Length: 315
Image (tube, one colour):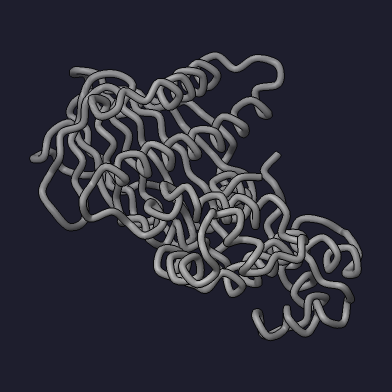
């Protein structure tokens, strides 16, 4: 798996959810902060105003995408002066996979497509922590064809679900999240104040090393072997990797191995010896010690605790 695919696989827990809403003016909806979640809004028809908790109103048009990676609150309305209604979303309640709804008065119609993802707060990837609280991707920027295609497919499936819709919608929601992150990183890489992780993924050498670590975390990587992949000297590679990624190469390798192990423990029933082997540890004992140092609890206990806390999937 590549870095962005791994980030999505590692961050999301449970099922995502989505809803297509036809809003008729006048309308205004407050979306409260929801810790441990990320969400998006796409304008499919008409226009509306984004009213962030902090900052000035922003007008949104057809094709605009709003991404909220840290669950911060915001509001949408047909006008900045419209009274806002409180959302009935409950942060701890598992929502259905997809739905359609209508709301508001009898005026001009705006159609939005929204989605939400529950996140594993214990092992958030630094690429996500670096994102701003609210990302606005105007339709005119970049003309992201893949993002537009994913939006159109998802909207059509929700509007007229057919056989296999659950599988299609769940896959499209993950795909859409990937395209949103891609679009933002492409946008960010063109800025002067580029984020560290956007710079890391745009750097051919560092990106090659990251892809190698994510593609085969069990391989006995060394700083020298990763530097060879990056086409840099050992010292130059170590300095550049730490500068852009925020950890030394082997420190990141260990962190990613144990993050991968935590996901395997949470989502599979593989024996501890197999999990240890799949993330590059030669013995279950060495794996257990490393895991306890990182998480503060042995891997077996971690599995029992996370399985007992995990909600049942929505059916």
